[in-house]
Image 1 (cartoon, one colour):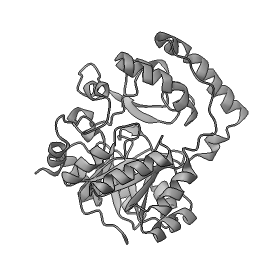
Image 2 (cartoon, rainbow, N blue to C red):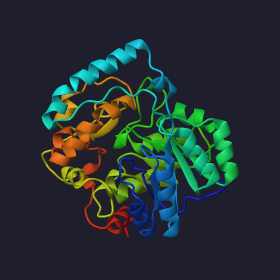
Image 3 (cartoon, rainbow, N blue to C red):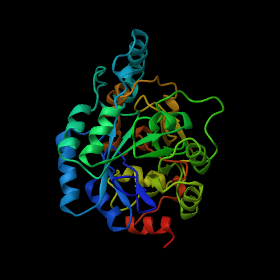
Image 4 (tube, rainbow, N blue to C red):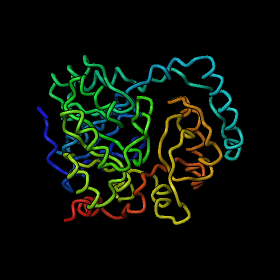
Amino acid sequence: MPHAEIDTRIVAAPMAGGTSTPGFVQAVHRAGGLGFLAAGYKSADAVSTEIRACRDAGARFGINVFVPDHAQLNPSPDAVAALEEYRSSLGQDAARYGVAVPPLVLDDDDAWQAKIDLLLENPVELVSFAFGLPDSVVVKALRKAGSTVLATVTSRAEAELAAGRGLDGLVVQHGSAGAHSGAFLPAQQGGMPPSTADLIRDVAAAVDLPLIAAGAVSDAAAVRSVIAAGAVAAQVGTALLRTDESGARQLHKDALGDERFAETAPTRAFTGRYARALVNEFVRDHGDAPEGYPAIHHLTAPIRAAAAAAGDRERLNLWAGKGWRSARTGPVADAVGALLDV
């Protein structure tokens, strides 16, 4: 990487929605890892405040930005009809808590340009992207400003496309990863390689870029496996989610340790984009949710907030990767140390 080097084996995934707070990122840095702030769902001003907090603390960090999907921001009439039908299906869940399902929001690009402008005016060491690829003009501008630029890919085809954008490296995300998939191309025939290490080998054979492995990297053996496969580091999320410094809701942290939750599954029920979560009642009830991000995110937001306030885990988005059973409680330093086997 021409600008910044990833000189640690552990990168803390940017977990949007409140988990990756500045305090969490700073704790990861002190533990010998590299943390990423999550710009998703925040205003550019809020992102700027978090950047300042990490800088003031002397922490090394990166920031992750969601790439808007213009097809989802300009849906077809059939797609809008499917979203309205899904909105109607949420009525019973909303009534349970006495909240309303809001009207459809179809024009939310997550303040894309404002965030790019911020990162050009106030550059950070590393910028990563998810849900798509920034165009080469954006990549070039960020690199000129001094940032190392990464993008999330989930397949060899996505990696090959990303390599043509002038990026410095790739986060290679396997389907076993918790929370949102970064996929932006249709799934390939034959499906995803069986493990994160296998996906790393597949991508490494296609592109000559530094690779960060993500997906069910839940213990030191998994870290060693992806490094041996060719990754420069492992990106972990669920493994750190239960730690003291994580900003995740306690309800979510406790659910990850509850034996009553027996499996995870990718679902569009909460946001309209596939994301791996513990299977609860909401996932089972709304397994046929249509594609529609971030429209469905806005539709379910009041339900999720009310469920959290009521202590109801059955209607909360309990993001979790396939290695969720290994997630540790206690200080983040202990969790990072266990991943590094020190």
